[in-house]
Length: 183
View (spheres, rainbow, N blue to C red):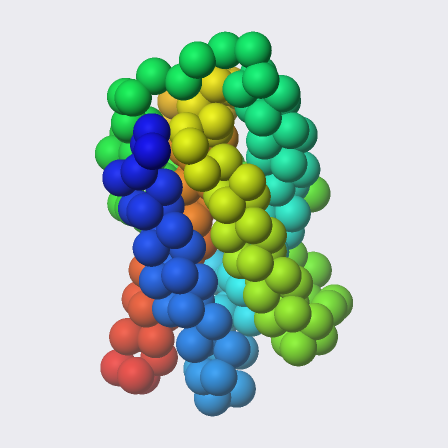
């Protein structure tokens, strides 16, 4: 199977990161609604933001997976694994300043349970999309990623990007928790 290590790494990261982020939904309300001293988002708002960003990333990934599968019918797949390490910078909140598009900013309007349901569905969709590319098909279609000038990245890298974005915010929520506990 081509891209076996890539697929396993992406799958494990989906499970691990989404489980870590999901645990924040069970945090006490005073922690989830705590306003950080820097004026940043509360944990509840960060959770909503993760689902908003994933919503838009999944639109691109869905289309890309269809195109990759179509290309697999006429093109051979190389045995070269996808470079996931280049995406790791996305998971580091200290690596760069990230200016978010306005449509990905949380409003605080949806209920916490609906945000959690969306996140669960997004996790499941990531796994489903990954399963649709079991033999390296995801390497056959690339789409340009402007964040951090990553350039053209394949569908495995796009899914991994989505997961690293969630991980970035998991780290931010850990920092909010630390600040909350120190106050």
